[in-house]
Figure (spheres, rainbow, N blue to C red):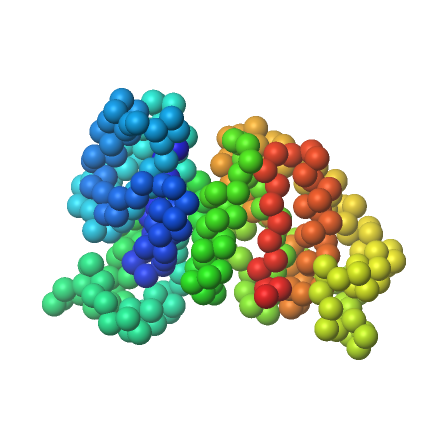
Length: 285
């Protein structure tokens, strides 16, 4: 049995996450009372007609505060039954959440006559603290549109050929902000930049002309070897500590050339060594 618990602040994309999981064979329950989580797991194990049941539930600020405080013990109860359980927490910055609610004109579940929308969004962070602290995977949706969020969820949650730690090597551009959900970040802006080569500017780090240019630069090769040696030594220890998800972010200025080249090369080099290595280029589209 596999159970995915989806949580996050209102407006962060929880409904989209449940839609993605439902489309991929999960039985989904929105706004499950947290106290029912162990019973749901037990009944599914005892009465399911499926050989490998897959369930996804949403637990968020619509729950009673007393139930949310109990989340750590409820989760421990579920995992004591040897159920594969992932806790996914979606979030975005306050400004983005305010904008999303203004655009959709939806009511925030914590607003009332004495609590403004901005106050409700801030209070929600505190209320969901017990879930945030135990999240296996955190996804910042601030800069993701609907389709990018769907792709990210599919990549992280559904594209795992084997159990164990899922590693993501992700390229990004600093000019669009550093990924807040990264576990390790490497800054490669000191390397020669193909952007300043007019004949290379319109290509990406996946295209052969850029690959050949960067591969010929001694500094690029030295940086690659240093990062690879670090990851080759330490990522297996992340896996040994029972981490469900680890994100390695490689950043350059725009996220089109240097970081893409290095992320792709590192991802390919790590795949024979580690299980579940994925590569993503955040700003390449």
